[in-house]
Length: 459
Image (cartoon, rainbow, N blue to C red):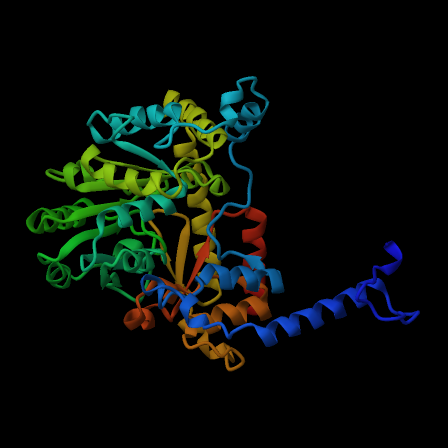
């Protein structure tokens, strides 16, 4: 019987032809026959759905690929390149070896109990209101997901959302994905000569009020601000709060850099202003707080009736965040709660360290001929590079906007990477960012020294 079985193979194989080559040829032949007999596929059916149309790869995808190709000194991306506090990383190591098996299983969907209790203790004291850890706080996959769950949970089709420019680049696409209508207002510098502070970047009051209407559902506030470093002062926050109350608008306050303030600037949580607790959702980040951006643990807090909407989005998408990481963040907060306000607190020691690095970066950028904006908070710095434009031939870069041309030219030719701020503006306002570059100064001193040396040689 076996003698009569024949395989559909050629009578003989060329001696020098490998089995792998033969298999590949056979597969191609079968594929061609299949294509000849299968009906044509209409790929338009599988295009982006309407809610995602117009979306493009983010600036991060493009510039990470650029960094991988040219291997520059990367001062573009906002992550520390130095070690996180030992008590934070040791906590995670201890959890990995802990005999409690439940630390490696699913935890409570809306947030690991130990973590929400720690956050409740911290923020209850900071906002002067007792937070219920089980209903007023949601743990998310980074502040990124906190933004997503907030926007998707509160914005309906046709709702208008006010976005202050420049903005973290996910704000606009998230609003559009929810069916909302973004309305933009830019911060503009009141001065262009001499020392410039992030406090010099302000909103036009009449323009701001003109954006509010009965259609406005939400305003997204970011303080301390990325990328300018502006810490909104009390008067500015009171004006925003007044308009929110007048037009019954929800305020989403992105406060991931809440501990990173300099020069006596005060970080004021807008939810503490009169009449704002019931209309504010505040977002935070363990990555920014403890310098562990890869852990991707964030949170949102506010009144239970507002947080409920976020819970509905979260439970049907992310569901729960990694238990060991939440436990590690909880233990880290417990360390800081015991020394809150004391000199050894990381919430105070990190900004002391960053202030020195900020000042160092401002000096070497100014020495290179740029005009830096000195940030009051955060760990980014905008610099106006237009004074050195006449030294550059950017014709080799085909990009539409000058800041893209500049940052790519610098990456390829100088080995120093920054981020183009026009990525943080709406399409009509992108020219407002073209003369600037964003650099990050939460980097090892040796890398900041290298950046200073590169720019010194260039000068």
